Length: 285
Image (cartoon, rainbow, N blue to C red):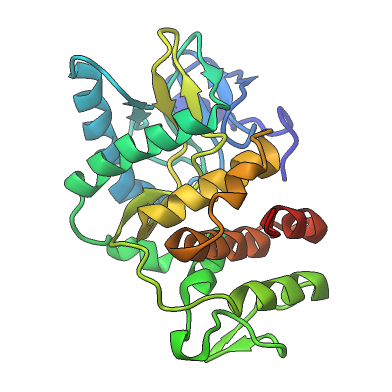
C-alpha cells in the first residue's frame, strides 16, 4: 500500500490534466490522491474501466447537481486535454473544497441506496469490461460468488479448491482456513438482482460544505445491492469505528449470506489480512 504523499504524478500527467505541476496529498479514498489546481488526481486507475464508467458517472454527477432538492452527489470525473480518462494510471475528478469524511454508518448506507437506485436506472446491462478485470479485488469478488449451493460451500474446500477454482497461490494458511469456514455457510439464498454497485463505500463518501454526501472513487461490481451494503457495514466496523453490533445485525438469512460473501471478498483481497480480527467481528454476539 502506498504511503500518503509518497507518489506524485509525472510532469506529463500534470500537463495533460492542465493543472500546476505539484500535488498536495488529500484525504479520502485510499489516501493516495493529490490536489492540484481544481482537480484531484488519483493513481491506480484502469483505462478499460474508466472508458465506460466515467462517462456514466459524469452524466449522473451533472444530473444530481441540478436536482432540487439535492440528496446525494458524485465526484465529477474530468478527462485530460487529449480526452483520455487515464494518463499513466492517473485519473482526475473535480476538487470539492470544504469536504470532510463521512463516518456515520447510517448515512453511508442511505447514501449507497440513493446511489444504487440511480446506477440501476442508468445502466440496465452488465458492461463486458467488468469481466475482464484482473486486479486482486476483482479476483476476490469473483471467488466470493463462485458457489456450489448444492454442496453448501463457496470457494475452497480444505484443500483450497472449489469446483475448478483454486485460491490464489501463496494464500496464507490462516486465510485459507477462514475462507473455508465462511464458504461452508454459503447456500443458494437469493440476495436480489445483480446491478452496478459501489463495492467500497465506507471511506469513499465525503460530506460537502453543505453537508450533502459526495461519493468518490466508485469501485464497480455487478452484484446485488445487499452484498455492497454488507461490504460497507463490514468495512465501517473494521476500519472506521462503527459499532461492531452492526455486523451482528446481519446474522441470519439473506443478510448473513451477503455478509459471508463480503467477508470472503475482503479476506482474500486484503494482502495483510488480520484473520483474528475478522473472526471476532463475524462471531455471533
